[in-house]
Image 1: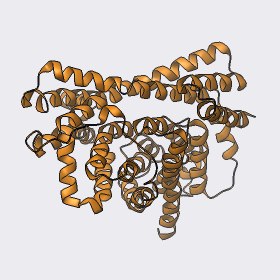
Image 2: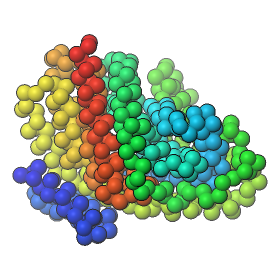
Image 3: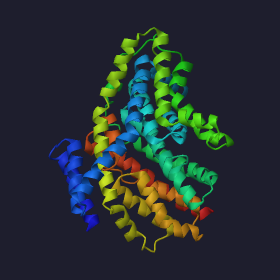
Image 4: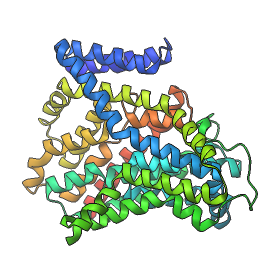
Length: 438
């Protein structure tokens, strides 16, 4: 019965948004209330769950998205993004620009949380597509596929890191196996799949569109452009590395950890960009403040929709859906690696959160790993792959992608959902092949 209620809830959400055309945030709240009551939650507990979902989602994302949007707007308006994209085009050529996007997404994606990397790199996707005249998704999907794979497969991202510790897996082997499997997965879900999407009508979130192509003299230098754009990446990487050394418990280590936390790293990057891409190039503070204000206005709808997805996810979690599904799947006699993938995939479809799905699945299959009946490192990757499958309307990432690329729900399902499923299924295939070799 709980599973049926969740399925009916997701169907209702799709109908409200796509058929009834009810405002998306309202649709989320209505469905969350319906699911919670149908699952037997008390009204008082349900309201608390809604408030917790709203607060926890915005609490973790509002600064990241806000500062990320500001940095992206400054990089776009100043011409820094145009300078970087021009260099990429010259180095790789238009013919191979997809591979430039894959490489950029993979390198940055390894060290950054998905939402941070997404917000920072999306303006670059828009600029490259505009500069080359290539379809937006043809350029963007390869980079987004790279970010998705690193988020699901590789430490130091939250779920693979936590599961590695849970399973007492060798992190170095997880990275080695994960990167090896990730390469063909990204190629399949990125450049190859994107070639089928040239006719999908996608458009950049208007706040990130720079309507005028700047001259060489109007753009900042390449070094300043790159260093300013990737400053949050540098700060977070330094913080991550420091956390692995003896410095982590020292005063210096704690300061670096603070500076390298995503919200603070992005805040500092915005301040630096305000100078390097603005004041240092003769712009007035009033003009820069207007640019920053416009960037925030552009993401208000995105934040509201994301918070709606967070509410639904919290209600699904608090109502016990995850535990119910986990109990059903744990009784299966399937192969451990496939079972871990399948549990994570079912949870992902019903709950939405990749991290919640992966961690829950990890706890279920832990006895199999500790008994030594399965390779712990491959189980980490298998669960990570399963946690990415069939991302749809109850996933925050689904709505971030939809709103930034101004797609319809239908086209988001045809592009984002299919891409995530390709990543998840091909990741499982890679794990099974790897397991047969070891």
